[in-house]
Structures are given as C-alpha cells and as structure tokens.
Length: 252
Image (cartoon, rainbow, N blue to C red; front, side):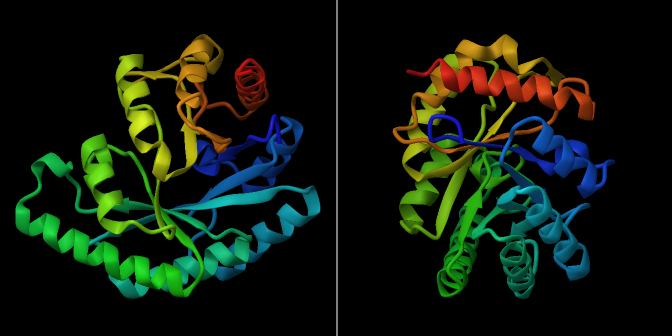
C-alpha cells in the first residue's frame, strides 16, 4: 500500500514463468498483490493449481487483487461463470475481470447483438450478486467496452456494484486518455498500468507525468496493476515497480 493505493502485477505479464517465480518477484519488488490470469497460471478447471497459488500467497504474504479471466460474455456458456467465481474465491478475491461481447468493438455490433449482450450482462450480474462478487469489464480492443462511450452506456444500463469496469489507456494521445479516465472513473475498480505507444513498449518512468494526470481523474485510490514489461523480463519488474511508486508519490 502506497498512499492508500494498492500496487500489484498482472500475472499474464510473465506467462512463461511459474507462479512461484512471480510471487517471489512481486515480493522482492515491494508490491502487495497479483491479478492471476485464468489462461495459464490459474485455470478455473484446474482447482489444484489454484489452491497451490493460494498457498503461495499465504507463504509470501501476497494477496490476490483480482482474477483475470478470459470469460467472454455472449461467447462463453453462462454455466462456465460459476467455476470462475469459485476459482476467484479460492484465490481470495471477489473481483473478476471479464471481456464483454463478441470479438468486435461496440461500434461494429448490430442493434440485435447489443440487445443480446445487455441481456447476457444482466444475467451475469444476477449471478455475481448472488455470489457476492463483482464482474469488471476491461477497456480492451475488440470488445464492446473498447470505446469509452459504449462502456459508459453499459455501466448506466447495469447500474450495479456487481458489474463494474477496469481502466487502461488505449490512445497515444494523453488528452484522449484523460477524457476516457474521467468518464470511466465512477464505475472503475482497478487500473492496468503500462507505457505503450502503438504496439511499442517503453519504461513506465518515461510516462510519469502522463500517468499522474490519469490517476488524478480517479477521486479515490484504486488498485494499480502493472501489466507487461517493456522488455518482457522478470528482472525488470523491480524497476517498473519503483517507477509506479514514484508516480504515486508525486500525486500530492
């Protein structure tokens, strides 16, 4: 915890590394939590792996900020949602990240597709409420919530503490990212933190002031999760974590 912000890592940053390697690196970098991905490290259909991660968290004093699923609403069968919720609870979190809709932007969806998506979202929200968890949609390309206006429309439609958003910068223009952050902030729990320009990755320290301007749009401290390293190296986590701490330290 730094100035009330919770700082952590998204495990998919290091898909080739074991959960043990990742937990040790997070501990050494002075971060406090991990969002475990369901694709490699913590599959919902492999509970033994999930329990092993939970034990590692206890051993190293690391918490689970969230469960980064690849459950895609309207694509995955709804009966697969409960096993993901169960896996999240094994990891000690009530936050699940989902992808919203078929593999396309909301701009490319038909009215019928949008109506179906909203119906599925309401069904998912009811399951989340019954199980005391929160489903968070990601601002991600090729999902309904890629565009900020669609994300806000969905949040207003759902109007539920059990159905929320993540935020991350999707534009090269900082002004556009600031506007996006401001719009998403009332519905947002976690932020994915990185420094990309187009498809190129750069050290987070090079975007210090940009990130301070983004974070200031969120009225209260959020969970900030480093996602991907500029060079894909586990050893770089300490440097990126130090950059994130410096960003937070300069917010006052």
